[in-house]
Image 1 (cartoon, helix red, strand yellow):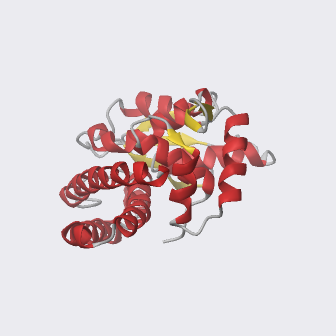
Image 2 (cartoon, rainbow, N blue to C red; image 1 turned 45 degrees about the horizontal axis):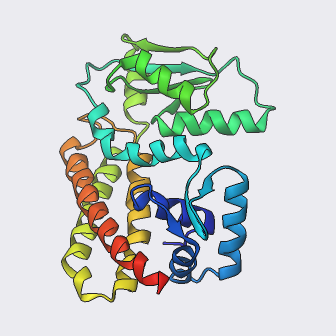
Length: 263
């Protein structure tokens, strides 16, 4: 697990503090747990403020700024991702990217990220696919893709009668067994940590909870939410619940630590 950047640490601390303000001293003290220098923190605070990501909340204190509203929503959406899942009829949601250019690297990265976040895989050249098992189906997926940066003109549609070969290839695009094992192993790691964290120094517990929490939340954010039988849905739901429990414990730890950093 790698240490966070000063930017991600500061924004995550404010978010973890229920959107309330944090002080510069709290940011500096928190960053020190990860070996981040005070000067880097203070430079980052200035840059985030200039970008509207954070705003002054009084002398030496900061809260989320207007440009961080969407980010804050995205950061909390992972808690409700399982609620997006519905039963699967065997149909597929398709995205046709064959007519799109690849010379605009920024647009290409935005498109690829949007498709990855929504769990799409490439089935054929210019054709991406995912199971049609999300609430709202193609229309809902289309709306989310547009919000994530996919062009409004890109076709997003449902396919219900793939030929046997393409259907089989589509089902094999995700490593379902490995994903299921990932749910089980990550859940075990979280539950093991929860049994021992109270024996740790508060600073150590805060650092470990941040790093481990970042790892498993990323796992959830990029999970494609596949249906059974492509993955074990029960294993995923159990993992998601364990992340919620872990996240609450992590928040409690950091709420205890932050006031001490002002002393």
